[in-house]
Amino acid sequence: MEQPQLGCSGAEAILNQPPSSSISIAYHPLFGPHDDLILLELDEKLLPEVLQQRITLRGQPDEDAVLCTKSKTYAVKFVGTSNSVFLIPPSDQSEFCENSLDCIGKDHDQQVVASVIKVAPGNMELVEVAPRVDKLKLLLSVNPYRFGEDIEMEDLEETEKSYTGLYKWDDLVEQVQASDEELRSALKALSAVEIDGYWRIVDDKYMDTILSMLLHDSVLNDWSLDLLNEDEVVSMLESDGFPQKLARHCLHVYGTNVDENVDKRVWRLDEKRVCVHFAREILKEGKRKMDTFMVKWMQKIPEGMRASFDMLEGEVLTERLGVETWVRAFSVSSLPSSPAERFSILFRERPKWEWKDLQPYIRRFASQIHSKNTTDLGCRTCFQCKIVWTCFFDWYFWVSSIV
Image 1: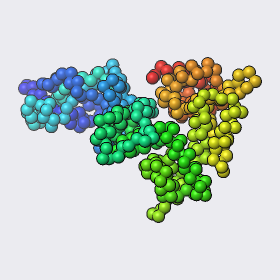
Image 2: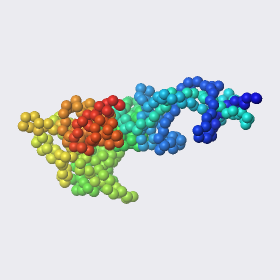
Image 3: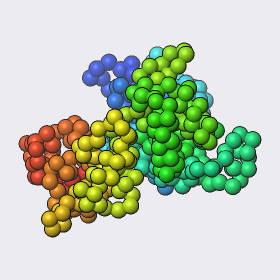
Image 4: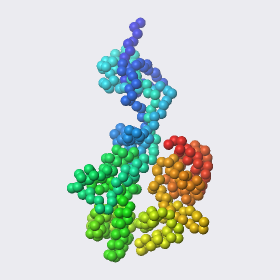
């Protein structure tokens, strides 16, 4: 009896197989390692993003790549498998076929055989991670905008020759491993401003000068700090010698928009942001006795605002030296976003912490802990408890082991 001929077929042959059936496989004529083909395992919610090409891979040659959607960042990790995973190309993929007759058996008497182009040793997995935005602050800190700097458009060509550390949006997208939304949020958190196409942070002393002048003008013109007309404020600051862009930026950094219409925009200076700003300026000179600090701080606070030491949570640390209490700057914004690196700095700062002091510096990690099964951390409790050191240290070492 004549044996049926073997007909090479593509992935369609597998897709059309009924449950519990079997199919023969054979080496494709172009079988090989094909290192350019990598399997990627996706959560179903990410599939539309990939199919509609709304994702990007970001990272420099010396960095591990991350995959970014519009709003989230994912670490890309290779996971090996002990099972054999066969890759079978579609029959209409001419780049894998020497000729169409090799890939499609047209005779119904032929036995269908799937042609394997590659055996995959594993696949890539995506793990959602925090955006890696620490690099952003380093990039923008190289060349902050300072008093007297002229970067008008007509001088921009000369500026590019004379200055380093200037980055446009596309430059930051290429350098920083974060989604577009996360990158914009990080720029806002740094109080960065786009000037002539370049994203800059403004020198602290310059921002202090602009804010102080705004407060001075509010007294001269009898402006309410709760109802500042943007056009009036910007016009007055321009007459004082400040660029219009930075005058508006000052309102964005220290104020909240309370009314926006075609004719005017009205702002309210944020009490906490203004008070924290002046506390930072005082403590730049070094630690101070609590009583001395509070007196000078209250002198700096604009009339009508009420400063409370609670506003400085996550901004300062206090310590007892003899009978005196001292206060010094220790801002959460200066700490790295990586859990392991942050914990390392915190424990170098203090071998022992009280919960009320530690909480502001690790609060952002609480949601990460709650998203994990607490039994994986070696206990049955979590950060919502006042202070459970077993859970805390288990979390610390767990983070250290995976970073």
